[in-house]
Amino acid sequence: EVATGAVTTLAGSGTRGSADGVGGAAQFRNPLGVAVSADGSDLLVCTSDSLRQVCVSAPPPPPTFAPIVVPPSTLVADLGKTCGDASLPEGKVTFIVGDDEERYEHVSKCVLCVRSVFFRTMFGIGMKERDAAEITVPKTDLASFTAFIDYLCTDQLDL
Image (cartoon, rainbow, N blue to C red; front, side, top):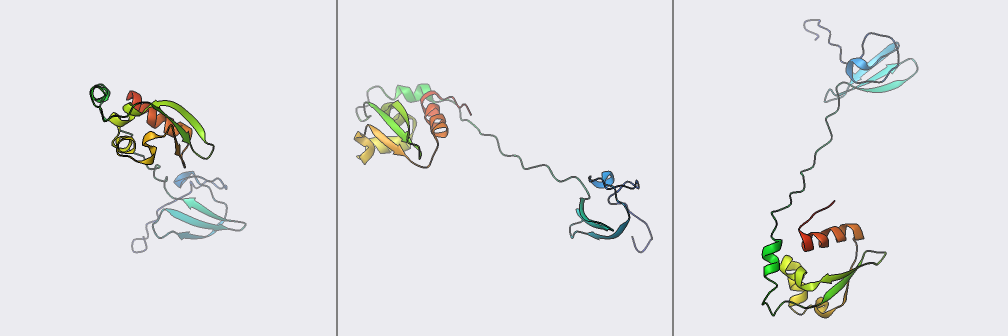
């Protein structure tokens, strides 16, 4: 503090050396010049043989991501919808997945329709996939697509 003459140590322990570290864990040998970043989080320290950037305080922890929230199971109620609904498609479908064209075979169209509005639309209103035995799913990988279909068919999510 210029007005009071008080000195604040931002980095360095007073022990001569060249160890990198946060705050007091850093060591310097013959510092010739110091500059502080605009936000006060870093120092640039010039010595006779180097220019080092030193973190004044520990960086913030990496951001955390919200957990995946799996809604309550509706599998039993959804499977109950498969009885007596003549509009539901019959048969199974094979998905050809990703650039490698990996196959995920023998998936019930009926179950997909009662579990997903997307598949109900695809198989129910005359889209080209309605009567298809194979459907291509580009730009995804088999593991992700399998996890999605398995969730629809079992209400289990294994990542």
